[in-house]
Length: 365
Image 1 (cartoon, rainbow, N blue to C red):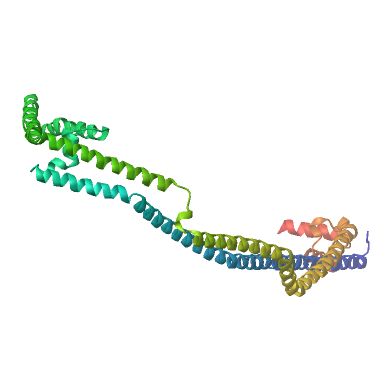
Image 2 (image 1 turned 180 degrees about the vertical axis):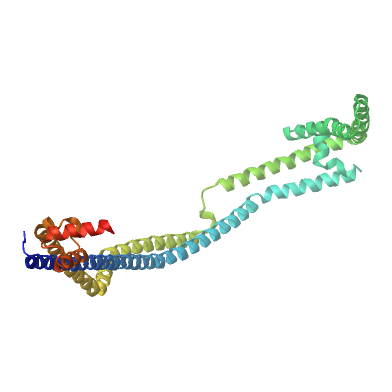
């Protein structure tokens, strides 16, 4: 420990200089840390920019390749759809013509039978409605559909109509329904019986013969339906001259397949060759700046490590050489200046006395 006043002043001056030097080193350390952080952020930003540029460029070029081939495929698919539509229309026309041809004899027979039925009815002065399907279904039913027609006729006119009229009446009473049914039976049932008696009594033989002719008409219609159904279900399309459409469809399907293969090959070539070239070009364009940033960052890191080591050594040296005598409270340049002033004024001859005077002075005021 210093003893004389001169030694005390020298000690305090050295302590102050050491603290000032430590403060400068710490400030330099702080600035270097900020600079290192800034350079690291810039380097990361530049690396991210390179990665994003690579990703966007690669995606854009890959999409351009895909879009080019997809347009060709869309065009071929559109042509394929149109060709299939034309084929279906051609087949429909062919089926229609075949139906017309193979059912011509039955339709001709139907026309002849209708003429025969109409001529016979007119010759015997039979009312025109007597040759209608409705008349034969109601008065001479032979088939299931005609019996079903008769049932529906009875159901509608003797159930639905009376009930409908009854429910439309604001104030419904049971005897209203009885009256409606009686009126319905008299009007509808009476009309049905009257028409049947009038026509059957006068034209029974003609009507029976007409029934036979009408049965032949229905039979021919069934034959037409059967032939039509058979033609529509026939899977043999060789009769409709669809070869030109089939050839075009096969060509377009092969074109679609070829374009798909080319698209796959182009994308594979892009991924294995072009992508690498693009990545190399982008990285080369940014290499100079990246190298510069990395070098600046490396130099700053080295300088920072050096300064940090100096700060560490200086801090340990100050603590070891001056801290043990001054204590934590007086490890400050301004306070050391005040201690030096106390010694110079003669109020203390050593550090311990100067500290005591300083503390007593603070307590007083």
